[in-house]
Amino acid sequence: MGADSGRRSRLRLGVLLGGSGVLLAGCASMPTSGDIRAVKASPRADSQVRVEALPPQKGAVPSEVVAGFLEAMTSDDADFATARAYLTPEMAKKWRPQAGTTVLAAAPVPGAAREGGRDNPGIDFPLRGRQIAVVDDRHAYQAITPSKYQKTIHLSRQSGADGKEWRIDSLPEGLVLGASDFQRNYRSVNKYYFATGRPTMVADPVFIRQRMDPVTQAVVALLDGPTAWLEPVVESRFPTGTTLKKGVKSLTFDDQDTLKVPLNEKASGVSTSQCNRMAAQILFTLKGLPSTRVGQVELQRANGTSLCVLDSDQADGYAPDPFATRSGKQYFVDDKSRLAVLPGDAGNKPSNVPGPLGSGELPMSQVAVARDESTAAAVSKDFRHLHVSSITSDGTAASSLVESEGGTPETRLSAPSWDGRGDLWIADRDPERPALLRFEDGSGPPKEVRILQGLGGARIESVKVSADATRIALLLTEGEETTLKIGRVERDGPKGDPVVSIAELRQAAPQMETVTAVSWAGPSRLAVVGKEAGGVQQVRHIQTDGSSSAAAVLPGLNSVSTVAASDDESQPLVAHSESDGIVRLPPGGNWQTVVIKGSSPVYPG
Image (cartoon, rainbow, N blue to C red; front, side, top):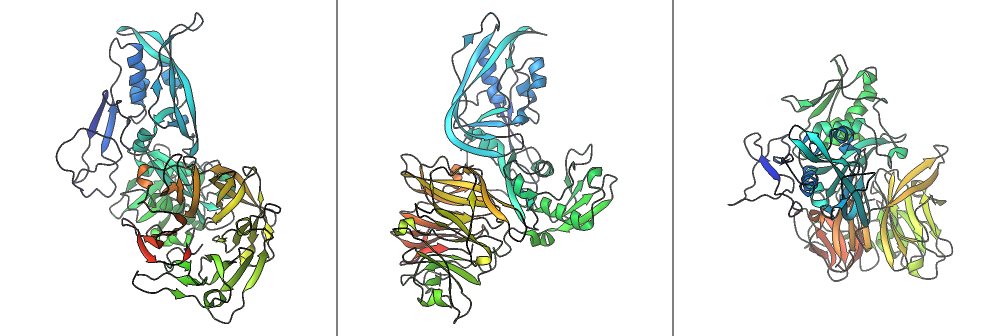
């Protein structure tokens, strides 16, 4: 993930000291010698390695101006003042780096210079690359299918204090960065909003600059409102138009780790209840920032008086999945087609759950356990029937919810999935009657879910609904390829009987040629099994916006057919390997076989 090679000759790396130690963060590469030691970071220190660009040299030729400008875009300059020095005065005023970022697989490569025509004197430099993502003006990242990128930078001679100098007078809007520079300069942060009509937090991932006061950036991004893709299903408790108080450039903590957030007049009249929810949004948003400890948040009126104070424990009541840390149990289908609980240690034996699903009365192929762990849904051995039963007591009868008429197991029911509202989801893969079905509160009758766009002629292979019930991950097969897409779960009509549909399906892993398995692994993160073109199977973490990094690739494992993760990211990953059985990956560890014979490992959800 180091900086793009061959582009640092004109950059100066400054190492800034903070607290009592030096923190080396980000992924910039720099010449060094001697050993590298881990040091304790200051509680709120931002990344200590800064990259500073050099201004244009006197008499620089056009190719040097272009190269210098491209390098300056990768720097840590707060307002890109050095990059603007390569532009004409008019363009320096017009250029908006915050308008968005084009992310290329590698650093942009200037082509051969071309002289402009009579109507456009000067020099053109084609800018080429392979685009893999775009970041919009609301900081939302979206991975795309890699495609050719070609734009043009135009230079003209400008009169200045030192005579005529070449400067850029036309260029693409926003920033253009190679992937490694983007990963070094930006970090992903989850903003949090409330699911529409419900007191449940929903993660909205955005990218902010690594070393430019990330706390203040994250709060400002939160106040700006949700990203366009998520906006239809979430709402903010901050009144429209709420910003930081005029003149506030940076937010500060007191010695009790309280973050004070002065707001403008738009928020001065809110109730205590609304203010607490506003503060909860900030607390959840800042929780994901590395090296940031926030004990509580105090929101202040424009006149400086306190609106409310909320601590982290109080904010936890709005968690997307209140059951995420309930037991940490992992379930699976044993070698006798019964629902069982994986042992805590590999040396112990698994235990079967109470009721017909654990007794073998209803042999199963795949299973999903409700998030409160009182009920489970199981697909029959032949993939034709869906059953739901209690897993807390014996003697309870199982309900049969639906029957597929597909001709083979592969064209019948998928594995089921529970959302955080208590609804059960499943796909009927029958080519003659394909359907995505939802069972309210885990009981019949089934209600078909409409997919508004993005499905095309693909068949749903797998369904995984997020804990907050606003997003759905679908594995879709078309021809020989199985791809991963994320959709937005929309609810319209009466609250008691809404029409549920899936909108704006978008690719979540375009870099993968085929995807085998997927599981939610946090508020905006997925555990994905798949492979890139010409590559081998990988298990890796991917954000719902499609962003990833080399560090997200997990230790290798052969022939993985199923993966399961918890919304509690401290819990181990679990998978089924055809060669190794049910295996477990603790954080920072290696895969360990837990049960040799079994299949379909799952966490509640």
